Image 1: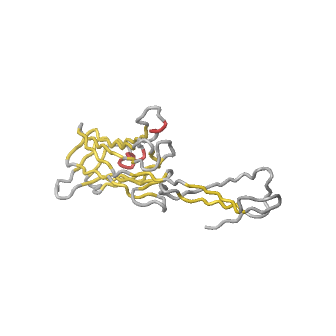
Image 2: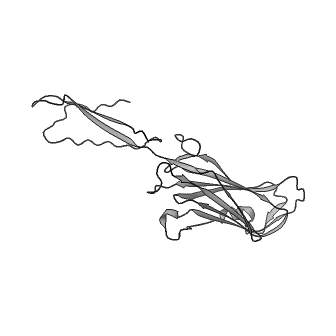
Image 3: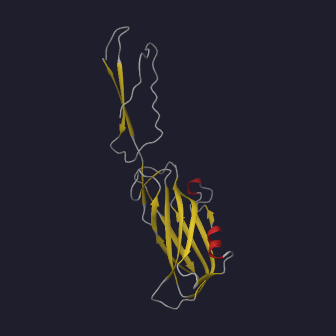
Length: 219
């Protein structure tokens, strides 16, 4: 099970920002003969939620079949998304179940493994617990004939910006009708490790002061 990609250019590797979409894939080796009651259950950590199920690819469709309604395409389209935390909104949409029914693999050449690969997407939610440095995991459980095997993708780690604002005046003393220039600097704080978007800066002008020019900006 792997993280295939993320969709924001300002993050790298397994660092992700709130609102970012991750693409995961899980590959299962299908044993020879008949497997009954086959399911794949994928569970995300709280703070992640599924948003789309993109593909299900069988490496050898001539040998590997399912009795599920609609075949393997039906397995993908009939994926069931649920909330492992019941009514907890933080875990809403964080579990998906794929019901494969009975899977048959007629290929007896054990030197080449037949596989099923699923690819799907999840989003990093804007929740109070999704803060800088928190790790989020994704685990999958494949059950066939009453036996279960599990695998996890690498953790993703949340990054977020921290902005600091400083304001100075020159000169710092004056008389009526004197001109004072105010300078405001917005910069990333030391812990900040992500770009900031849609930033709004508000600077109320107090009574007794009249804006005569500006504002201007640099950087």
